[in-house]
Length: 201
Image 1: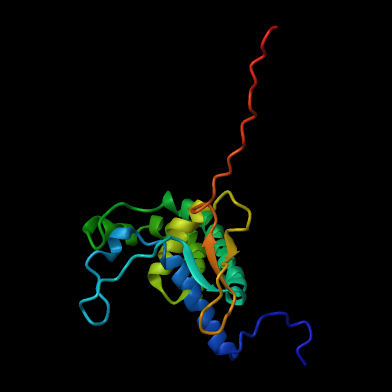
Image 2 (image 1 turned 60 degrees about the horizontal axis):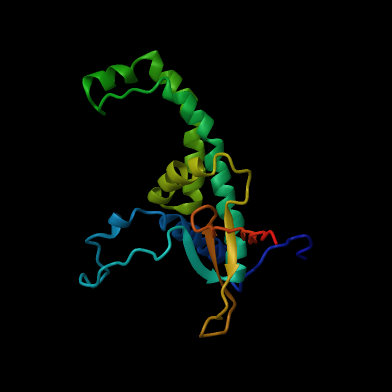
């Protein structure tokens, strides 16, 4: 019996569904890459250039998949946000020396490194948790370095789902796009009240 198990099966086994949602979340986060990342990239044939996404932070999928991946993405952003205080606390013990230099090696053997390591431990754990879901180092970097600071002052509701008018051609499935809030927001304009000149007769 599956009492009180409220989630969408999406016509897949549990492992297939988990992998699909992980890939969808990774795809959504990777759309935040800079546009110059795609310069010179080619597809598998070696000739066709890779096009950047039309809209950063947006992925088109079906409505049920968008609703399922939304909770996963928002949990990942919450994990990233909760690691920010640990990273800030570790900054005071960090070093700006180049890796494997003499100064860096002496820092590694000092007590300051032990303090940095202890302060940084929760942030490292958070990144490992995110990597266990996303399976992409680049997506984890974007999640912690771009999305977490962007939503630092926002209490939940980091994504929105908007249904598309046209269904999918193959099976007429309802389509929608899921995107991050604050990037493609519509600017609401308030109408100005018309002013009538008062004519003194």
